Length: 139
Length: 281
Image (tube, rainbow over all chains, first blue to last red; front, side, top):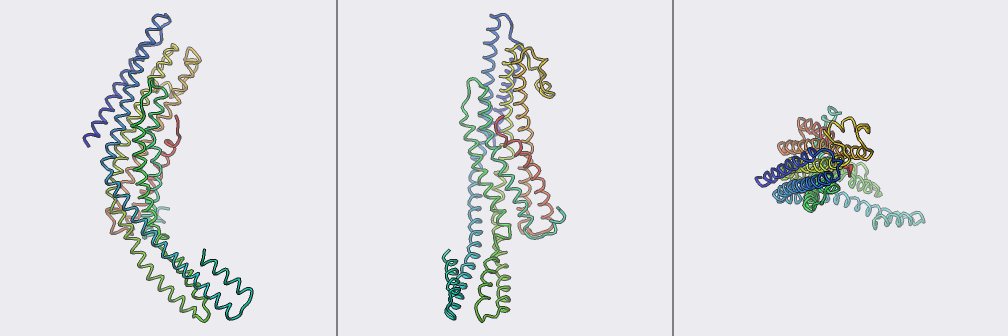
């Protein structure tokens, strides 16, 4: 992970330089009352603050790149993890399918019982029973 | 609670730690998003602003990696839950229907369905353990991803938050000094909260107040980074335990350790969520 470490080190150096520039702003002290001096103070402070902005921007970019480099290196392993997860999910789904199949068979048996009952003694209630059992099978 | 639960020697302990690992990994997305969020926040007080494209790419890459981890822990949780591998419900419905056939001996139906349930139970137990082991066999790959989370992400985000804090201090220093005030030692000023009497003007006092508010949010995020690193380390340890004991997943001693790790994870995940799901500073 030499690249990653180097990028982290660059981020650290940029932050250290930014901190130094920020301390220089502090040393400028409050803006002077004299208009000419105040204008020079403003220009100096803005220049230092822009320098801090560039350095903190670079520090952030190096930190991002360090993370991205590690992520790229680990991606093949993550892909393997994704495949193993998909296989496990498939097995779990298969078990659910077996249970569902047993339930479907039960519904067909219920329908058969209802038809037998209707054939043995036709009645409106028996007919309703067949329709209900058929509805469950077709659901 | 811990003692009571360790009495179970089935896959309940694996299921419990998987539930916590899933919960922990779901809480890592706001941490991943923080690379981009920190860049955008810094740009609010950086002139000229910088591009946040690399930060956006990094956040997206981490979120994609997290999604794989979340799916993995989710599958481990499901695979170690008995309900996923039970066909009891289907069998009960079927034997109930068969018992309803006119002339069928209900005693025989009960006996046969009991035997079927026993035999199917044996087979499904094997499939369940095989599935859990299949997932645990890939634990090294998951740990490689966790190494990035724990080491590089925590370090990289620490550097990003450092950069944001420096930028915040620098810009607010300029604002305050332009108002003929001085920030001085920010930690000391913000610890007790800025007092208006210490500032020459109202705007200077308001700038100091806003600075301290933003610095406080950053300090909370930084503190939560420790909890994040701990949660990742605990997840890594839990995976190591599963990997090292994959032939003894129902052992009582392993269950005790797994329940303890699940408790630890629960504590750290809450702190991470509280700090990183807050959004804007």
